[in-house]
Length: 73
Image 1 (cartoon, rainbow, N blue to C red):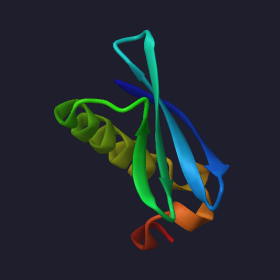
Image 2: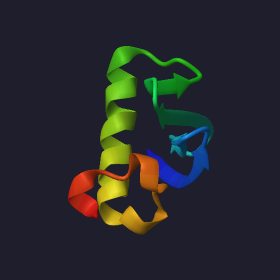
Image 3: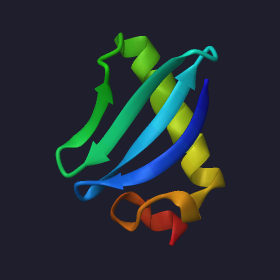
């Protein structure tokens, strides 16, 4: 699982994630909370969220300000 990028979207952010080298999914984090696109089974969504959390920690400057964790300012 690899986070390949992040972009601003409607007051939040969209993270692009590649699973097993060929499946592209998106985790949208915004005012309404996180949402997977397409929807995934809960255990897979948890793995995606963990991968995004690690990526955010390593690349804080690439995360749009509205969703950047306060601890990374």
